Length: 149
Image (cartoon, rainbow, N blue to C red; front, side, top):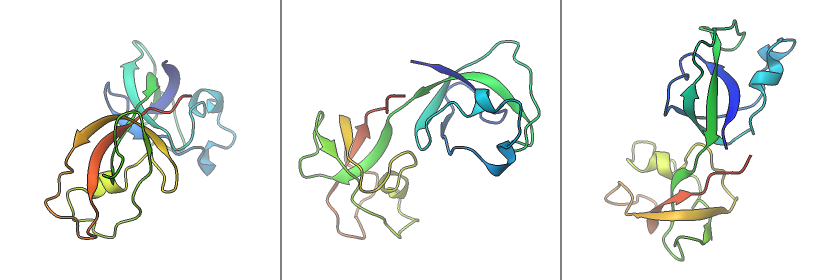
């Protein structure tokens, strides 16, 4: 189900994804707080529609202002331990990885998923983009279910 919210104009593009980080100190006293702060912190969202005719409003966080969009929670693509990783099961991330140059790093530490949490797997995507895991982990790329708002 989609939610109408305000996002920075740089994010206000259909199919753009972001992880909602919650309230910033600059939000204090803002007249648009109720329209901006209506998402769940730490959840990954995709802009499904930019509202036609929406005006750009001044914002203390976004230097180019904010505008109205519709967003929907989306799943997170992640690498998880291959053992018992199948659609319908639950899995958690393998743990932090210091190898930021690895092509899989963004999937081993994906935005929108936390270490130590279990997530429902909706799809097994297959092999991760790396040729070799520098931590010697046997990983599989999966899609976690979108969180319900």
